[in-house]
Length: 192
Image 1 (cartoon, one colour):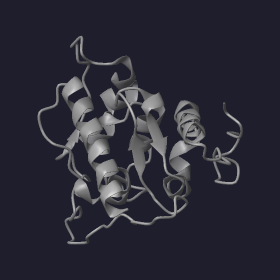
Image 2 (cartoon, helix red, strand yellow):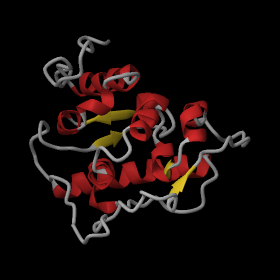
Image 3 (tube, helix red, strand yellow):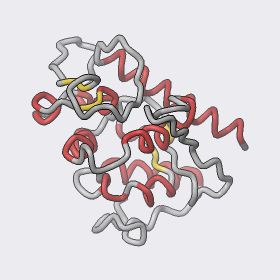
Image 4 (tube, one colour):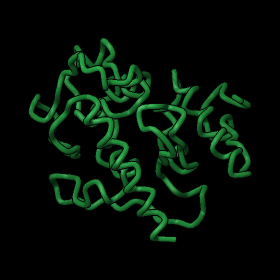
């Protein structure tokens, strides 16, 4: 099971790298909690590259508010904006590790705290994200139940497409669809 989890993490990392290249970024994604000043934060710019998928196009908030560069790599504008608006109210490195696993950065914090993604065989406890297809397409992404439980606030507004994609992937495998209301994501039941 541990090998499968690392493969999933590697695939999410590959997805972020592909989106990074689509955006014309040249540095690898990292996590740091030292973003209180503008060092390490970016203002997103419009990339005129024909390779940039529309889902990665910067929002007005991304263009006007300094933020961690790796936020731009999510293919869902509402999710990016929610992360930017909530800056300083959540543990960015914990989110980073929950998305990328420890493959992204084992010692993510400047205070020496080491994050470890929960490696559990129970799908309700895993806190990760899975990317099944083209990384710039929201419909390629799936959220693990533990991720939804831990980051519910992030999915409250404008993430319906990601929730539908998660249910489609679960249904494809023969798993039950998520009970979004039970998970605290209000008004998202039966999205298919």
